[in-house]
Image (cartoon, rainbow, N blue to C red; front, side, top):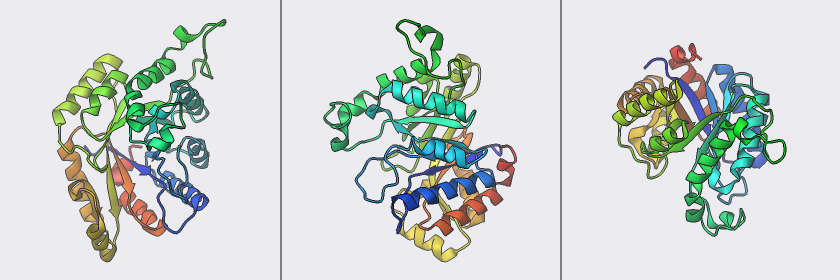
Length: 309
């Protein structure tokens, strides 16, 4: 259990900044995380209307962050695949995976999308229609990425450059442990979010064990299983108490605490949910100073995990 890794999830939410200021702040945040030894840095995709949104699709941010950092894995959590052509996504992430070897994650998700956005992405009229296409598109995506020889034909085939190059690390994301079944079908790693509204918080340890065993038998290696939580670590008790009082999510799976409390509650979550290889934290600090302090403290209290990165 002490060998789990820690990553970060970034929504691009900031107060008092415009879009480009947020982009710059996110770059600095990723650079600090890289310097401290965090393992992953993921960007979420959302399309709700806001004049200060730094991005809708995070894909253009991936090479920017990968170029601005050295070791940390950069990726998406996740691409809302129902909006896109699997071929286009595969092309982009295959190339990125080879420009930044072993550092690019392709996470895919089936989240809700506003109907107005759906109507501008290929003729589907609402998000329910778009979501219904997800499983077929996910299957097509992994087939395109993994079947180069079968798809290549000099007359009428396709190539994802570079031919025979490395693939990005593929993840599926869900708010329920049942999403493990999809991850197994796709032979993908799995991240389970505990902080999204309506997330299923059932423990399901046995399902995780089954997923890992079946994946090992199918692929010859173990998958990576992670959970995503809201978190904030601070030595300022006034900040901790005010954040807890204002928090609107499920407090049992949110870690807002001073360093000792943060460590204890995190380890309890990891024990409760079982089989966790990585913890993904979405920091809910309201200012850059709060988020940077949280990075520093988390890296200090989990020094043993960073030594294995």
